[in-house]
Length: 244
Ligand SMILES: Nc1ncnc2c1ncn2[C@@H]1O[C@H](COP(=O)(O)OP(=O)(O)OP(=O)(O)O)[C@@H](O)[C@H]1O
Ligand SMILES: [Mg+2]
Image 1 (cartoon, helix red, strand yellow):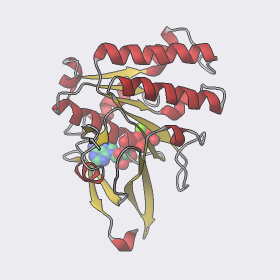
Image 2: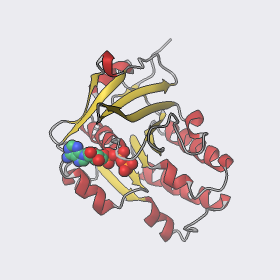
Image 3: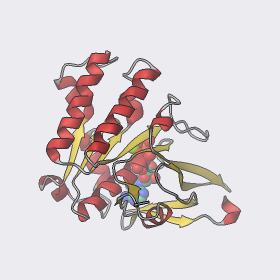
């Protein structure tokens, strides 16, 4: 069987676990509680792509662009020139929604469709090969039923796959619970799931990172300890067995 082309995340241990990277065109749910490192991981995924000549687009619905830029400034992988040069686009989903005159509380089926089409049009226009929606949870608050959530994620995933664009959707979940999403449907539509967690050991919180599923490839499911630093960004290391 011919191997599917891979989208190298640039996070070394994850690429090894994935046998080279995410299958191109897949949609991955990056799930975790507040502060576990979802946004940072996504940005590093996008900026690593730029090094490989792949344009990235980041739709934010959980932080303003101003705050996001401020938070990213400390990290080595982030440089405002990436935005000025058009290689990285950061787009405020709520500004688009407001400009389109969509209901700020609940979207009708027609409004969801308008937003979907705008996201796809922007991605096509930018020729994005990597896309992030941070977070799919806050976007889905505006959808009215589980069916609408399911349908939206399915359509976004299918359209971006057709463009060979690999996508990460962040999923906000409460701390210390074993679940991947708010609506219990997101993980079934997504091709892959990465789960970030804070685990407590002797009073300290340890960040963990684990690939749970990835359709279309064999893969490891190692639970890694994850560290964040300005100089190295996201780094993974195998957990000491006593910590697992
Ligand atoms: N320059 C830095 N170096 C190392 N760690 C940092 C740095 N800046 C922030 N952090 C850590 O990263 C955490 C935030 O990470 P991030 O924003 O990626 O998490 P998140 O999962 O997206 O959170 P949220 O659910 O609130 O959106 C902070 O709480 C802090 O612990
Ligand atoms: Mg975040």
